[in-house]
Structure formats: C-alpha cells, structure tokens
Length: 331
Image (tube, rainbow, N blue to C red; front, side):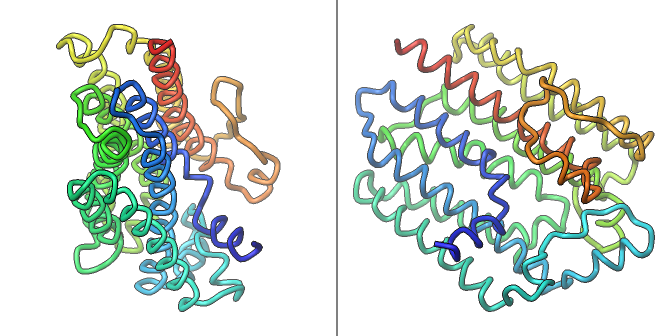
C-alpha cells in the first residue's frame, strides 16, 4: 500500500481534478440517457485516472532521460526563477529510472485493462478513443514527436482532456455521442489547456534556457503571451454562449459565467507576474481550496502555486457548476 501511495503522490495527484472532474461531468451527462449503464461509466472514469497518472509519470521519465533533473538546479544557480523540484523522488535516490518506467507501464496497463472491459460493453469505437489518447499521451514528451517541446503541448492537453476524454467517457457510459457533450467538452478542454499554458508562462525563462519550446517560448513576447491567455479564457466562456445561442445548450448553462470572476482574477495575477514577478499574493476564499499553504510558502513556491491552483480551481468549479445543472435538470 505504501508503494502505491508513493507512486500516486509522485504522479502529481494534485493535478487529478483536471481529468477526474471532466470525466465525472461526462458521466453525469450520460446518466440522462435511457441507455446509460453505470458500470462501464465508472470503469471509464477509473481508466481516465490511471491514464492520467501514467502520462504524468511518463512526462517525468522522458524529461529525466533527455535533460536529467539537475538542469533545474543549474538554472536556479544562474538566477532563473523556476520550480526546481519536479522529480525529487529521483534526485533524492528514493527510486531509480527503471522503477519509474515500471510504474509508468503499470498505470498504463491498468488503463488498458479497464479499456478492454469497456470494449466488451461498447465495441470497437472505444478502442479508437483509447488508442488516440495513448498515442497523444506518450507523444506529449516522448519521442519521436515530443509535442510539448514543439509548442503544441497546450493544444494537445486541451484536446485530450476535453473532447477526447469527455466523449470517451460519455460513450462508455451510454453507448452514444451527443452535440451537448461536444459543446461542453470544448470549454473544458480550453480551461485544462489554460492550466498548462499559465504554467508555461511562469516557466518561460527556464524553459527557454533549457531548450523546451512551449507555447509561451514560441510566442516570445510577454504581451503576446498574455493576449493568448486572455483568448483562451474568453473562448472557454464564449463557446458556452455560442452553444446556447445556437440552441445546442440550454440557457441554464450560462450559470457557468458565475466562475468568470475567477478567470478575471487569474488573468490579473498573470499580468502582475509579468510586470512585478516578485510581488506576493495570499489566497482568498474566492480562489478555491489551496491546502498546505504554509508549506508551499516555506518552499518559496507560493508565486507559482497561487496561480496554478487558481487555474485548477477555475476548471474544477466550472465542471461542478455543469454537474449541478445536469443533476438539477434531471430532478
């Protein structure tokens, strides 16, 4: 049990809401169908969790093999402000690269086995969802494509955790696809991409120094970075408004705009990061849960985590609002 907990923690389980909540949202939306079956739906959600943990560990594995973990310490010594503890479980000697690969393959095998069970329920279409997700997940930081090093990581994450994930879970649960879930999955994907993109803005200098071509590095200009961030946030809410206007979504989906102040707050914090990176901010209730803040501040990661957690909480609350809407309409 300790070994399982060790690897789940090192697979960045704090990031699980960006896959778990879209999956639960898709499951709730599928529950409104007469063909809904709870068992393949829950199996699909568990498969998403296993796949996400697998992808996070593979990201560490490929990054460590290509660059090693010590390059972040080197950047810190050069004066770059960077999160320097991405793979502490490797650099501390707690485990090795071979054990990490074994953990990656174990989580991947669990996801594949769960996918096979869904295949027995729903047929071959689910295999295409699984295959596309697996190929894109490995290609995020693995060769030969290494898309996160070519400025395509944010787009890839948005597709995987939005339309692919939600459509796959929805189909697993009810055996059908629907325009409503398609329209909802787009803003969800954009908000997941926003988490990764905000991260890349904050890691712009060290990523550029390390030769990692994120979208922020590709854009080069801080003004362009903020403009793209604004577009991502506006597009997420605009797609909901567009779906309502086109008649594919009920007007009640406009309640998602209750989360817009969080988006505006995040944009403000990112502007402040670009203009005054040393300025300190403290968590507020409207930002959502930010647990263990004293420890975060003690490690001097508050400048990063307050923005990353706010982006994560924005996605979480956005999904929760739609879940409540879905269940309320069913009642």
